[in-house]
Image 1 (cartoon, rainbow, N blue to C red):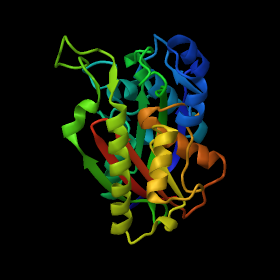
Image 2: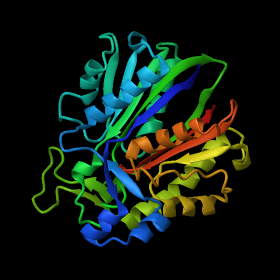
Image 3: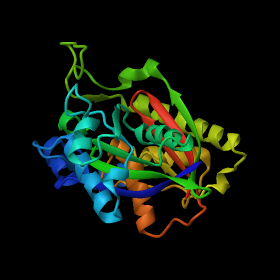
Image 4: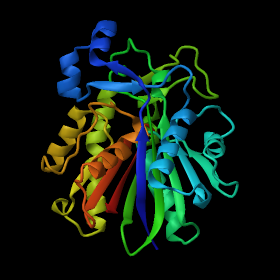
Length: 320
């Protein structure tokens, strides 16, 4: 049984941090952020807003705009790295607040930038085996609550957002064709929030730490290799793909990946200037915007590729 993205929506918090604010607050060059990094502004949650709030707002948008019947949802996957509590799982909170049935299985996926693609794989397998027909994937993170806005390495990049995706059985229509996964846990400390769990280290900061140079080297190495493996397994060439929708880390990194893979300007989608790096929500935001702009046609081949914290990555071949 095939499965397809039936509907997709996203939610952005109202609070906005502009490049000019960052320039005044911590001395980051505003023109550099816009032209090199590719970000003009980013949305951040209010002090009172948690990941569950963004998740519920995205879920409500999906239900209301697409006439989704809540009672039909059989599984809720919540992709977040900023759960409301260490326990219970935040997905249970969201299940209740969205009014989903008690028969709905619900659990969190603690993955960041690769999380959406992993969630597609998990949800797709439930559907392909015939066990379920309608799965709700929600991505929601509030990285802003873990960022030191005087740290130039992280302050300029990340924004908060939530997205909601309805995955359904589709017969012979659209489909998740294949997914390639990868993990390099030896470099777990290249993107990390120390002291955010059980393990404590008084010598480490409680804020998000990122080794930008190592993350850049990692991403420009594993993304081309992962996608080449995906295409090879499916007897496809890069020219067979309409769009490559990468995790929107930053413009400079995506441009370097494009050049190394020799993709065309039309194949690479960069869409982060109004959102920043929204972690697991970046790919859903790009895909929704392509749909809204009428840039996708039934039968188009798309490659989704998420990569980052973990370090982890995943590439997915999807037919619209």
